[in-house]
Image 1 (cartoon, chains in turn yellow, red, brown, cyan):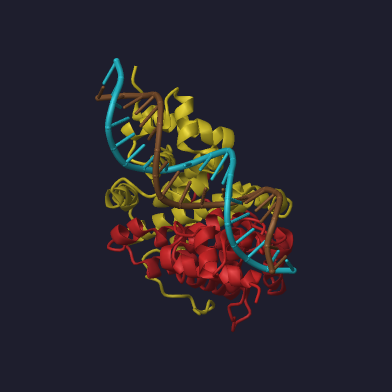
Image 2 (cartoon, chains in turn brown, cyan, purple, green):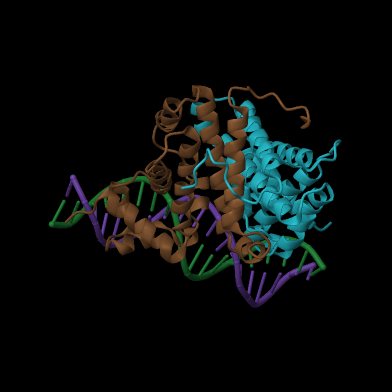
Length: 192
Length: 192
DNA sequence: ACCTGAACACCGTTCAAGT
DNA sequence: ACCTGAACACCGTTCAAGT
């Protein structure tokens, strides 16, 4: 029976688990489906689109995080932690997201992420901006965390888990502090 | 006269400016030096090492930021802004840093970055952890900022400059708030 | 509709050989 | 010491052709 688009994505994730981003090529993916490389082009426009589909699944896992509390702070924390967990579960996932072209309509996605924050009391522009910052911090963090060199050498100096959490809390508490304040600076911190 | 290692790096940056990360290959770099591709291997171990050398130059620009004030807060802000400026000056620079293997001794680099923060009154573990968070946030941010799709679609919703600054200030103010406090949470923010 | 075979241009890298 | 020519294995992609 024919192969589906989701089969292709699943096979690509299998390859990632086994050989990381460097081992991810259309021949290895197709081989796992008992199919030749050109067959993939029936289900996917290009390798870039495949990367985009894979990346989208990580962002989605962040959104699917169950949130008990209702504050926008808790939503941001839950999103970030779920996003990081999802990334850490696949080798090189953060790098994948860094190079993958965004594919779904970015406007709609941004709105979907920001809407709950607005419902939780944040104004729209702060919601978008805070969400963007949290995603950026999380992706950037895991890029370093998943780099093997970093992991070997830096793991002795800082605890990734604790330090990630420290930064995330600082960011969200900082947002709480500044809520509704525009981007003016407190006097004890100079702007460059 | 013979070509130097720095010539290779400079030529690689020229290619990045002209055709971005996708256009960066050893044949295009060597052509710009009136040399054939295999010649580069005399000056550089591999393409990966070349990427690492390029990435290192961005991190260095962050360190070379002139800091007027002495607080560790100001140092973190200055580093982040200089790092972001450097990245924005070269197309795809953030993606480059995301995929480049770290090459110089990571321990030493981390210490060199953290030392001034310690001198400015922060304890060592907070210094390392705060510095890591700021670098992660900045790199992650510019990855999105330099993505053309993001730039076209999201630029209408948020102002990159303002939102970056908001997040950075929130992060650093959050660190100030939490200085010496370990990673406990304030009661109004639940941990997942 | 879905897949194969064969081919193309391109890539990083190696290595013997030149100077 | 520094570079070239030729070659290798590998890659994304195209396309005519099969079923």
